[in-house]
Image 1 (tube, rainbow, N blue to C red):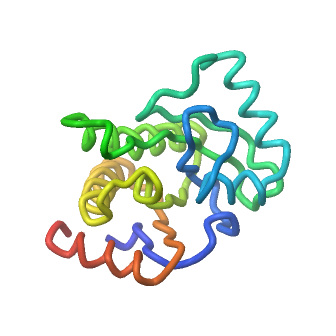
Image 2 (image 1 turned 30 degrees about the horizontal axis):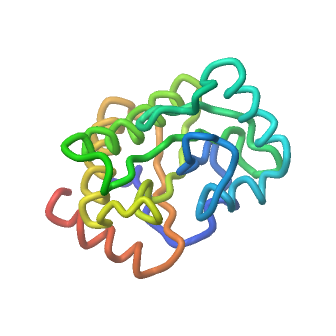
Length: 175
């Protein structure tokens, strides 16, 4: 599908309408992609996350849900924060929760009027989701969404070539 771009790069430098943050439920920043987005985006993102927590999610953003904030100093318009499942804790619900992250992020981007969205590999870092399984879920959800929404493009942005190559190999049988 020509509206899916798979590449290696720095998601914080993507010039798209929205980038997706693989956030933790606190929305207060963390390690990996989450920390990189908060560092590059500056304090406006944290301020917006604090407001989301106060107004909508005082206990934290639930796994599989997504919320949007401003993008601070990033070249995108929005950051869509989504909380992926922790693989060794989510049991039978893992695949549904991960699929929900992608689907709800895309739905939110669509409501915001975005034509392009950049995703990291949600839950595949410290949250331990097997990369090959996560790749298939991500690709299937995004492909289905793009079939229904012809005016959107999705970038999968990987931190290194080996993760990008693993993603491409995992989806070869799906596409």
